[in-house]
Amino acid sequence: MSQSSISSILHEMVDVCHRLARNKMVSATDGNVSVRVDGNSFFTTRSSIHKADVTTHDFVEVDRTGKLISGTGNPSTELKMHLFIYEQRPDVNAVVHAHPTFATAFAAAGKALDKPVFPEVLVMLGKVPLAPYGTPSTEELPESLRPYVQDHNAILLANHGAVTYGATLKQAYYAMEKLEHAAQIILYARMLGGEQSLSGEQIKKLVSISEESYGKTIPDSHVHHFLSNTQHNDDGLFTEKDVYEIIKRIIRRLEIS
Image 1: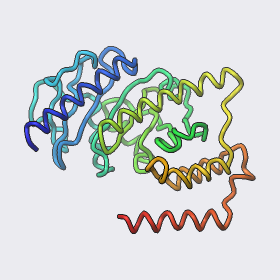
Image 2 (image 1 turned 120 degrees about the vertical axis):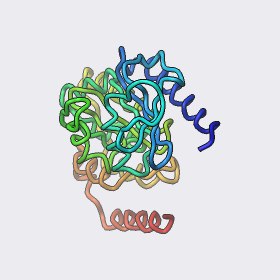
Image 3 (image 1 turned 45 degrees about the vertical axis):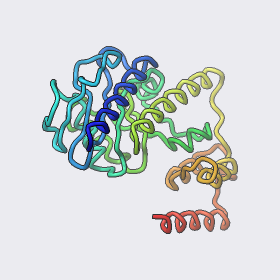
Image 4 (image 1 turned 135 degrees about the vertical axis):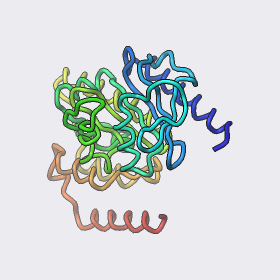
């Protein structure tokens, strides 16, 4: 990778770290960010630094085992979690871990964000599960993600925070921002009597237009979950036409790939 490309990556990482601090998604030295450089190395924030103070000199390069390649300081204490996600998801090139207030409140209360409430959240994040507690900086934390990492790009970490990831660093950060915004609104909605889920018909309509309108496909496993848990279960049943449309989407996806 060229020096200019590396410089661009590091500056983008600085920007994301500063955004996390500015938007109060971290405090003190919490949180960490990483980016895949190539198949064998990764940049990650060094430990023990406030994300508002991060500069391009506050990242270290590590290999797939976590061994230091370049840079000064120790890698993030949550590096094991980042490397686990990269190992499990070859399509992921960036990971963001933070402690956003409202999303972490749900994680502390043991509640997933898995109801179909906001169309844009369904399209961008789908269902956001809650991983069981794993001691930070140990193998327990990545192992707690194992049941969810393949089918989700945002996961709440019980009594800890949240982790999001994507094909680009912007995608990973925007997922964290969207997760926190949704958690805040849902908490306020519950103060007003509770959030109202989309109906089965509304969910199916969103599924049918999501790829064309938003350029995103809502995973079928998420769709089944939403439809089976909607308050409008009668509307949520798949008809023969629904099954036919899903099969067409799968075939079209296979043809593209």
